Image 1: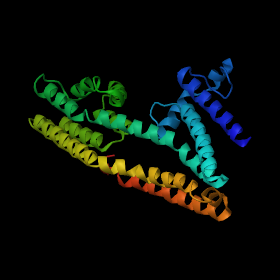
Image 2 (image 1 turned 180 degrees about the vertical axis):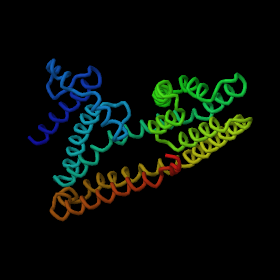
Image 3 (image 1 turned 90 degrees about the vertical axis):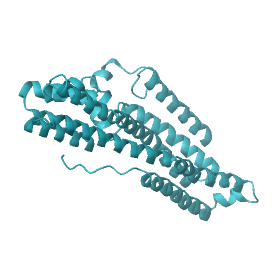
Image 4 (image 1 turned 90 degrees about the horizontal axis):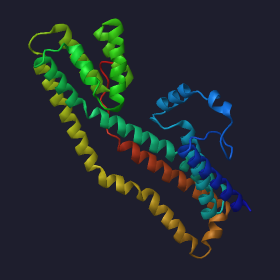
Length: 295
């Protein structure tokens, strides 16, 4: 009976997640939400929540639906495999974190791909200022209008500030606040210094800055490539223990041993150790970010 109830709840959760993603339905009803539901929703609030948790452009409602579905599936899997509530709760809570983790990784990769455009952006600014005679603010915002994704939106906000105040330092401050990245800080301060001091060294400074950013990106790509084997091995932290658990079920009184009080406690502790190793492995593989010295 419990298994049937869990299967029904998991199926309904899948329905909610699919209809939210495919048709934009909101709420927990089987069909469309009432008309006034859209009026009560606050897209700005949802956007703030997404920015705060680094979810990118994924709606928090979709993340919540996926978390609910995976939590139910993880709970059902743990309860059926180990014959108890404690392992089910631990696995359910652990499974519920995967949508947030996937969304954050996806958003971070989008931001990283956008920041890879900085050497080309700096080089274009250099060409516009040294060859076509553009001023640094004009060349900056003209180049920013062709920047990819998140960079484009930030440049638009900075350009709007420039049109209202003609204060280049304040406009670059908007750019730094929107993007919040060390590369942006270095580029902004270099452009501001070149704008205020002028002279014939602007092109050389921008060329050196573009080369420095390109070298930094190459080093990071090499580090990520060298971690490929470690990332593959990290999955064994999850695969091997669960494989051994399945084998244990078929040996002697393995299932009844799992269902005992001491067995449930030992399984719970083991699952916590596995999850802790998984999280720790992910943290030590994160590449260090440069400190923001101009923020």
